[in-house]
Image (cartoon, rainbow over all chains, first blue to last red; front, side, top):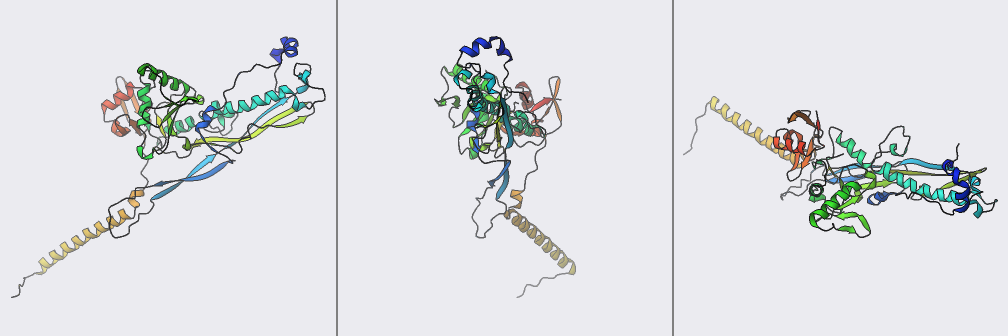
Length: 316
Length: 104
């Protein structure tokens, strides 16, 4: 089993850098910003079965006989699934003993107290969330024998693509055509216009990639001479669509997709067991090594997969 | 003075036949009313639409639909079967590079 820190490139400058610098530069990880658009279901280890009920029209002209119809309320199961995952690293903290970090501690200090190992653990937590955003939430593609984060379960984009390729799809796409800067404002509004007013009982979220989000924003600015209205000044990646309660949301995990997904936040779930499972690590000292790991559950999906509550466009 | 009608076996049979037919119609009407009020007809799951395999040509290229139904902005829901009969829609879908059609 190999140690998880690769020092190869550092070797040439080690004598100077590690002896004299007291901070570590890093690439800032994005985390999972799109997760705030999902409804969280805690305590899901495997499958949680709920149900949703659909009520048919019941109003009819008055007549004396009592004629209540059968099957007016249709109940269907909703399966919320989460999948068991892990993240692990192994450090040999004493390899860092002669370095700047090593100088901060005594030789008898517990391996898990070594600053560099602790720094690496903080990075692990951010990396787990970043992989969730960029490899799972939207683009995850289930494989029966998964080998990486992106193969454990289907993300939202994959779920929709599979439905549209099914031959008898559930969702009805809006024919917007290819999204382009010259037409993007109308195309975004076309999807919004498709929402059935009977089911517009709460704020809808329109999830798009950052590219599409910026395309809309810039086209709006060019067309009107001012910026569109933000849903919240603290959320610069959300825009209120004119005359509606629908919010256009930039989701980094959607990558280069041209898909528009419009549904309430309450209809997309993120299932997990405990929120600290992927952020608080277990540690075990194995002689000079420190094993660090976390085991956690996670999964996403639509709660009610129905064309009355999930709207999409015709682009992949 | 009694109004006596002269009947023959043949006319009696005709009258009976028309009565039986009338009753059969009434029974059928009542049965359909009962079926409607029981909700069976209203709640029957509709057959899922299937994507048509029929190809269509716009310009020099052939296309076919990838979904059985779609929403056309400012027009509403349109089935692929109906769109196949509407040249304007087909040309529009090709011009916007819609993802609901593919080259065949």
